[in-house]
Length: 103
Image 1 (cartoon, rainbow, N blue to C red):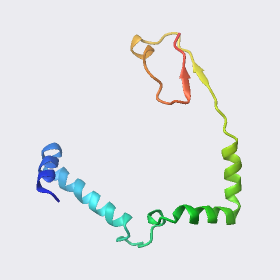
Image 2 (cartoon, helix red, strand yellow):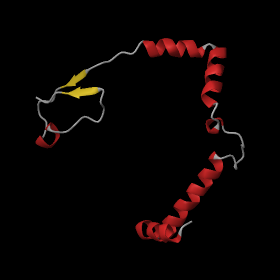
Image 3 (cartoon, rainbow, N blue to C red):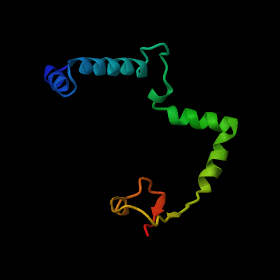
Image 4 (cartoon, rainbow, N blue to C red):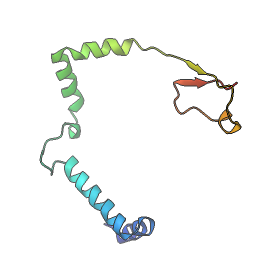
C-alpha cells in the first residue's frame, strides 16, 4: 500500500481503525476473488448472465419473470398533513415513487 494513502487514512480514522479497515478490505478481496473457502464465484465470470438465464429457462422461472416485467404498475400515493412543521413542508420525499402533497 502507498504510504501516503496510509498516512492520510490514519489521519482521518486514527491508526487503529485505519489498520482494521485495511484488514477488512483485504479479507473481502480475498473472499471475492476465490482465495477463501470457495474458489469459484459465479459473479466473476463474464458468461454469468448467460448461465443464469439458461438456468432460469430450464426451471421455467425465466418466462414467469418476463411476464412479471411486462406487468409494471405505477402507483401514486398522495399524503396530506394538516399540522406539519415548516421544516418539513419544503422537504423532498426520499422515494421517487411517492408524491407528497403538503397542505
